[in-house]
Image (tube, rainbow, N blue to C red):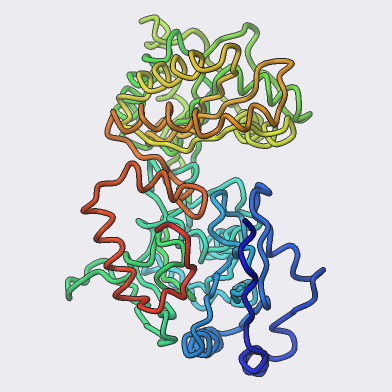
Length: 476
């Protein structure tokens, strides 16, 4: 049954319009449309108005008005969420607050290794601002040209360099947040040590906009890499990848930035659908890993260390073949193989996707058990398991059998979710490695999370947002 439409009072809309000015709002259906559909096209919401504040003070005033009238708010960054967290529901009774105009780089402090940015800053722009002062902001995602830092923090984004630098949660020193009652909390501290009570910023990181709206952040910076070594390595067997990771960390002095699983199914898909992709191997191999080492010292001999380690691994039968990049352009070509896989999936028509994590040592067992379970469920189902092997986060995706019917296959999603997530749970893993919960995985969260943990989440939500207006219906 279609949910009944909800009406936001015109008087409230007019007061919000007055706060943000003529460039800060729209009710035009054509202008609103891009903000009301999620990245994957699963959800198509409605909103009484799309609001684009330009300052944290404006965000505070908008939220205060909505809180006073009991109107729900959906915070939104670049709208690249893969779980439906950043779009409103279909009833139309929510205000969508998009932060794209709140996009200043407020300060850079290269000696303190920090940068202070507003929530609407595009991730690539934050990276460039750090590079301009000879520093590195290491968060790196496929959507970095459009995703915004507020959304990255609200979803605790992961990406390609978690093994070395951690998730978004690990890159934050301070936050500025508008609370559900409209108050503005200024926690923009650039301190590595601050032991004065609860670490409040961590409440809002990964909360997907359900506890408040992040408006600015103090982020950690790092020395810029001066030397990079990249290799694509064909493995004799999947289990050997875990041993190779351990050897690589030891041989490099733990300078591993990326360690990505790249299966033959992913390479084939990328070769078929993404023209710029090239296969560097003369022979076909079922399993490969992409390794990247970085050092802030220009003369660290990273490539030599990597080649020596791989030579020993070849002698031991752990590795079948390896291509080590001899130049920056060759390194980009190797990375192109990995980054082309999600693009190729999208072109091919998508499928049933799982973003899961398990302890690194259990990844081969997980892939084998989940693959066997899915193939028992449907003969001929195609498995594409790839991603961040180094930090235990695997994208375990399924495509319909050759010649199969797409919609009939997608209808099997809940059954495959149960198979895959049960295996994950049996290994002490997580049903969401980096994409979050949003609207897509709410029921899965209830199934795989303890009653105590859920109760704590609900109590926290009730304490900070007693009216339930902040991104309601997402996460819990």
